[in-house]
Image (spheres, helix red, strand yellow):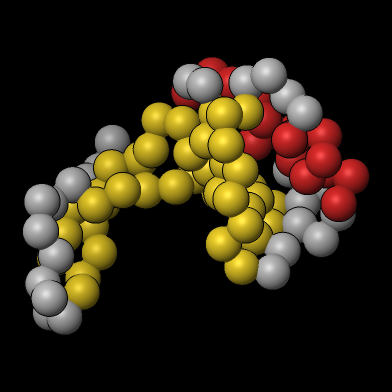
Amino acid sequence: MNKLSVKIGGQNYNLKESKQEFSVLTANPEAIDKLRKKKNVRNMSQVAPGVQVIRSTNPATRDRSMDEIRKTGISHHVYEVVDEELPQ
């Protein structure tokens, strides 16, 4: 797999895929409620109107939940910055 990075302020920062988190873009309240009730969902946070970040219990349940939500909405993997410090 190729390394992923993002450029911030002219400096590159390496990224890694989160093993448990994914984002959901949907205005479908039933889909969100269904996810909220799943045992494999640890936490849900609304980060913008119609955008949720979900933390699952492990990568396999993350992938199954993402597949399910993609039937009615959009779901993306979440990436984390590997580098220890971002510029201030």
